[in-house]
Length: 101
Image (cartoon, rainbow, N blue to C red):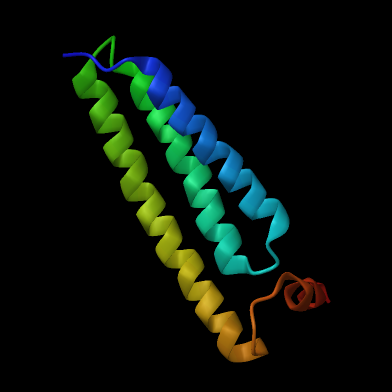
């Protein structure tokens, strides 16, 4: 049984819109990271939907590898955020802009 693509594309549009709003309206790095991950996951759902018709196995493997890479990226960025929080006392964008030197 195939899913209709219209509800999935509408859900992807809602994810993209909320992620862009979260990135543009937030001053906290962690919220911006979460919004960026929402944006990336919306792109993954779109990729999976587009490539599922050709070969579902290849599409699933590609998305699984992308999720693994995203998890590693989130771990590294979260460690950097925790380090900056301990060093600078916060992770607001305005404080981090002063780190440029």
